[in-house]
Image 1 (cartoon, rainbow, N blue to C red):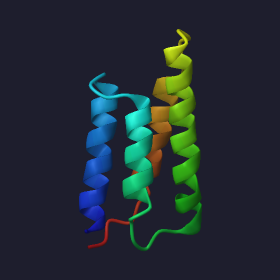
Image 2: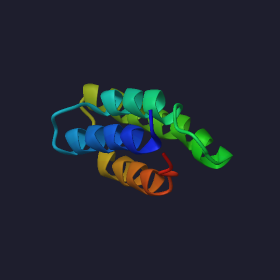
Image 3: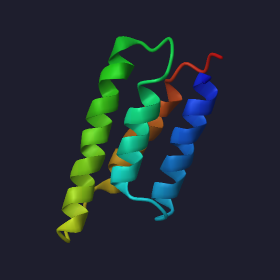
Image 4: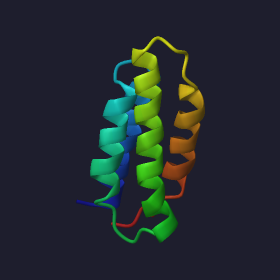
Length: 89
């Protein structure tokens, strides 16, 4: 599967989370599953997958407990990470 397809899946999951149609945890799972399948990835971007996924899971955990998590901040980090990904075929 091409990087573009994988990135489109992650961008779609991000949009669904922003719109409230999907949870932060679902986005974390999408990042892990699709992010690890990307090709030509620099090591720092590979390491960032797990950090972002953990941040999203923490946000979900806090949300389940009734706290107001900084979801927007984490989603901006996901945006920044997605912008750096290699979009090779």
